[in-house]
Image (cartoon, rainbow, N blue to C red; front, side, top):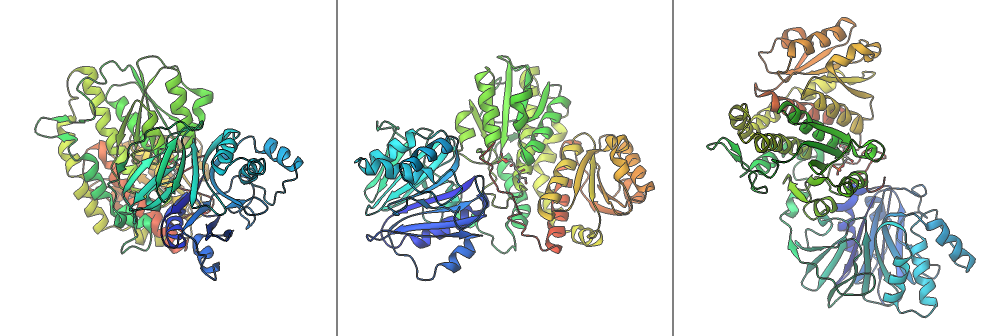
Length: 603
Ligand code: M6R
């Protein structure tokens, strides 16, 4: 996975390209590069490291109205200057940026090398400019050479290319996202909308198989054979300020603090308190009446949200399983016409999740995507899509999108159960007002949290454990993932009752245990926490102030007293803050943790 950008218009392309790369850096930050052209050939600047380093290495600003740029998350070859994109042919007549994997690159490389084309990188991408050049050398015009080269690629790609001496960009998509932005004679191609959001909110998403040619006169959409295809323009609702850091030191902290707003947006118009029902207008009453089981597929944090949704469904009496999308191809449970498969994915572009979603569709399941990104591949490919409306999330560590996913899945669980039974579940009446007051409850937690003190107190520990029961279990997993992801410290999440079945061997006075209390068999969780405490581990109880665990625990992170369906999600906000402050104390690059990227478009 990587971020790509292209720009055609009046004036110098360099600034919008670099801005675009900064806004796409969440997709990868191993190396970065740009290429622009000014009528006297293509100029390329690229290097390992972040976009900031690329910017400071560009001495004389590159001039040119047309350009492409790339920020990389390495797949083929380490993050060296040579492996950074854009890649060109030897004479720098053709420059290419690419996101995805070219599966037949070895074969193409051997063929091109046998024809005298010389390679200078370890990447799969480098075959593309050489292949385009091969067809230019054979007498094809640029567009035909590009189409022919694309036709020969196997694998996944979003590719943008330019040919020396032309005011044109060529692009193609298969399996990796690409979107066009348009405003008054200025055109962009990018992996994601935030790349150009400060220039335009008018976009057209490419579909798989599309080839576009962009010049100063406009954008032409065709299929690979050159037949015109119609793609409708859309206006994106995110505003550029949402995509900035504002007053915060990190996107992650900003996004943690955005949760009251993002949750309000998620539930707005979807809860009918007076009528005592979930009003998901996206689905007609009875939509789910024939469903006999639900399977969730997801990865990482989205998997934890999926597990939350699956447990909520089970508790509402609906058969459901949450599966890691990357395991689905080897161990999917049986599917029939009445199986609903729900892909949970913030980005809508995670390759593992897309593969599982496609498999489920092939096997006859109804499919639904829960995502944050309108126009994403998962949203477009599933039978239905439900949007969490969280706004752009830039920090690689998912925060506000987890909360919105879990809340939306709580609503959906209630709605599916109601459709199946023909009446709302009994506990819905109590849940609805608590859901409505959840944004305010999170505001209170954010206004007064002991997270900084706790992070400081336990900063030199050997490992960090998180335990929870029922709906507290996915929260324990999520608390641990967040902690390890941004602090690089060892952290593990366990079902509370599992601690004594093995993990207790790891417990020492140097391993604080965060115990999440949601109101589901809390007395057992407290016993499990005490078992750790007896072995010397400090226990941090995440629970309401009047909870019995407060008297037992060494420390306390406070949450309001609420329904078990929601308590864990508020506890999760406290855990997000602990992870954030622990990482900050360690001076970690919180928004861009090492080796990771926001959206993983390879399997
Ligand atoms: O875009 P997705 O929700 O499909 O992404 C899935 C995971 O890659 C993602 O949640 C990842 O685990 C996050 N970095 C966790 O903070």
